[in-house]
Structures are given as structure tokens and as C-alpha cells.
Amino acid sequence: MKVERQPLSRLTTLGVGGECEVWTARNLEELLEATSAPYRILGGGSNLVVSDAGLEQRVIRLGGPYAAEDLERDPVLSSETLHITGWVGGGRPLPGLVRTAQKRGLSGLEGMVGIPAQVGGAVWMNAGTRYGEMFDSLYELEVVANGVARIYAPEELNYGYRSSGIPRNDIVTRVRLKLAPSTPAEVETRMVDSDTARKGQPKARTAGCAFKNPTVSGKKVSAGMLIDQAGLKGLRVGNAMIALEHGNFVVNLGGAKSEDIKELLRQVEARLEVALEWEYELWE
Ligand code: EPU
Image 1 (cartoon, rainbow, N blue to C red):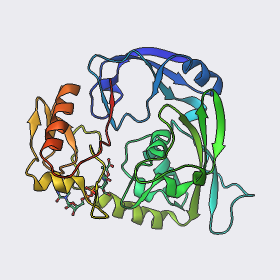
Image 2: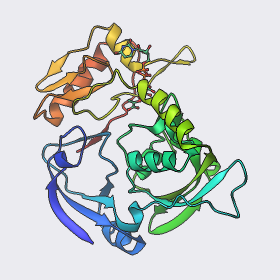
Image 3: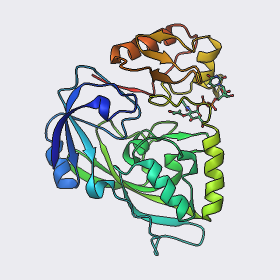
Image 4: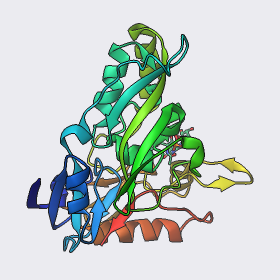
């Protein structure tokens, strides 16, 4: 197993975070060893604000077979309209998976285009866009909790918008997907539609949307729109700024501190009438 100390600013999309001990587990045995002391699980690092002082806990990543993908059709479980895949590791980067599915003409993951996550983290938070979310395409998943690996059907979990119901620190080690047979060209077209919806999002270093979209009078409302309407785009603390392109993104203008980001989000919350729930995770 690989164990190394490194700054998490290198492993997070926002580029913030001090030094940690990073353990890369490739199988259950390694994972059990890695989780024998206090730990946190790092996925794609795309939703994280990590303390500048680093962390005492181990940071665990999935690698090797836990980052591989097998999209072969399961001949027993599949039908003419349903393609059940082999296992896809929790450490597999989502963008690569979305691309192989497209090349094979398998439909279902188009809404996930451009999400800079790994499969395990994307499942854990039920990542998605208006064009779909992770649980739409899940056939089954393996979760390691308290040293035991167990397979679940999605229906056994209490999942919803941006949440899987899986307890923090339980680990999504691998999943099988249910996709629909299509053609590479058709899947590509839907990917372009989904990608177009993100065109207005910032290109700079961000961690995706900072807040979940709140429900107002029974309807989901864009947190970005609320922040924009409150005139908060461009609000800045240190080198952290509310993006000019979209109100729900924090951009790191260079060397932003985790304290800057937290303070910025607090200021946003204080200036809105609607209570917001954080989508970013704070590690400190
Ligand atoms: N809008 C504004 N100003 C803004 C931002 C948005 O007026 O600053 C307006 C837009 O013009 C649009 C509406 O609000 O009419 C909705 O905006 P958008 O399409 O960007 O959708 P969103 O609800 O703000 C959600 C997801 C994004 C995802 C997009 C596109 C959440 C929290 N956000 O944003 O996901 O990329 O839809 O599908 O659910 C993420 O979760 O990290 C994320 C970025």
C-alpha cells in the first residue's frame, strides 16, 4: 500500500489544504489496514475545503482494482433494453467512465459529464445535474463499513437530492451500473446538451457548487440565482471570491486560505433570507 505525506491542496480541485498522510488502498485487505486508525475518505477532492493546518487523520484514496472499470454486459442480468455492467471501482474518475460509456454506446451517465469526481464520492453524495444523478444508473453497490463489505441495492438506501444516506466514513468501494443500449452518436448528443448547461460555470479553481439548492415553497430554487439576486457575485475574502459567472461557485484566485472560504460562505449565508445547506465539506 502506498502511504505518503502530501499537501491536500494538490489533491483538491479548489487547491486548498495542508499536509496529510495519504493512504492508497487497492483491495479490501489494504482498506482494512488503512481504516484501522481515524481516517477520512478522499474521492475526487472536488467538494472539499481542507484546513490549511492539514489533518491528523489518515486520508484514504482508492487505487488499483478499486479504481478499475468493467463495463462488460452481464449476460444473465441484462436484457434487450438494460445493460448491467461488471464492477466499477469507487476510485475510478467519473469523466473517464462517462467517456467509455459513450464510446460503447451506453446511455445513462450523460448528465454526469464534466463532474470532476470519482465514482465512490459521486455515489456517496448522489452527485448530479439537472440531466440526471448517480443513483439513476446504479444497479448495486458495495459499501465497506466497520471492516465488512456488503452489497446493497439502491432501494435499500435512503437516498435523495445530493445525498445517498450512506453514513460518513462508510466507503463505496465499487458499483455495478444499469445503462441503456444506445449508440455512441446519440449518447454524445445528450452529453453535449448536458455540457452546454454548464457553459456559464467558472473555469477557474472551484469545488463545484458551494450550497445545495434550497426548497422554497415546495420548489427547488437555484442557490446561485439567489446569491446573484442578492448582488453577491464578486464578493471577496482574501483570495476567495464568489464567481462572477455563477453565484454558487467560490473561486480560488490563487493561494486562498480555508479560513477565507469559510468566512466568505458565512457572509453569503448572513445576507440571504433563505437558509442554505452546504454542499462543500469542511475538513478540519
Ligand atoms: N442563475 C442566475 N445567476 C446565477 C446562477 C444561476 O441567475 O449566478 C439562474 C440561471 O440563469 C438559471 C437558473 O438560475 O436560469 C439555474 O441555474 P443553473 O442552470 O446554473 O442551475 P443551478 O440550479 O444553479 C444546478 C446544480 C449544478 C449543475 C447545474 C446544471 C446544484 C446545487 N447545482 O445548478 O451542480 O451543474 O444545475 O445542471 O444542484 C454542483 O452540484 O456542484 C453543481 C455545480
